[in-house]
Image 1 (cartoon, rainbow, N blue to C red):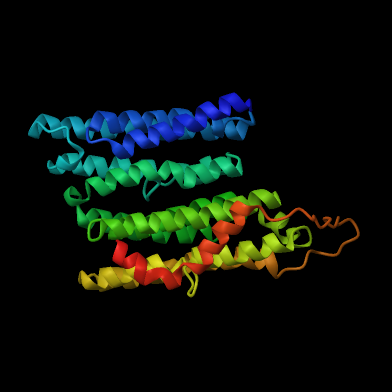
Image 2 (cartoon, rainbow, N blue to C red):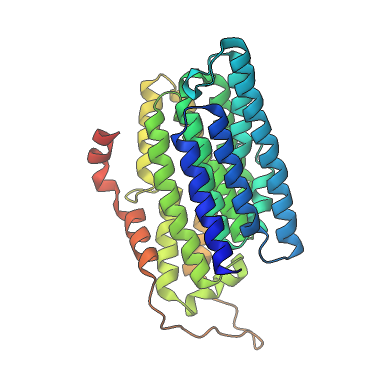
Length: 346
């Protein structure tokens, strides 16, 4: 892709995100979401492969539907209350429609069907943007309207997302699809705590974005797209394979890594809110996700490639690990001791 065109699209993404997260008026928030959608489409379809074009088409249709619902929800609220302010979403029908719209934008169950397909058709770096940067504006809208949302509905969507994200991810062999179901599962953890402790949702999102960025950048450096390639990648880049192991275990939420911190705080807060059954269910369901993270980690570092005569060994590269990967990995595995400081901040 032309560097100037890429610069325009990345700048548009930043502009759209900034407009949405800094707006008080529904129409401005909707405008930002639309700019974001239009800016990411060329990045998804830049390879001109039929799969990429299909992914871009699916993404456009789903995001256009969700944006229409956001506008419909805000207009209904303005019709009944005379308020266009994002924080004044008081009409129950409007809050239900908005929950459906934002769930569709994020990929929460039962509106998750598009996300794995779109991620599978996108390059790894675009997949990283779809999993992190594109989720930020909808999450800020949920954060601003958290007082008006229905707790039962959000808890149901959250538990279903963790269940489906873990369950469907078990059977996947494509790395991008596994990361998509991982994203759906993590969004469930964010949604369940949103009403009771909105700042914890944002903390969870920041940590998730950091760990996912480390995983995607590592996979991009190793040029890995499926499990069979991952199994033979250890001879090529042993340092990156070790980094991938640690960041995947952190994404799974194993102590003493960073990924354990948001899960621990969320379970603690749910217990304080007399939602111990929901905390137990969501914790047990996250074991499904743990299985496929462990499978990825196993393929990356423990399996030996098959020694057949036609098997080609990959040459070990002396290319140093990128500084961004090194910094993100360090943060992804070593932030747990800072949890007292983080809890005082939020």
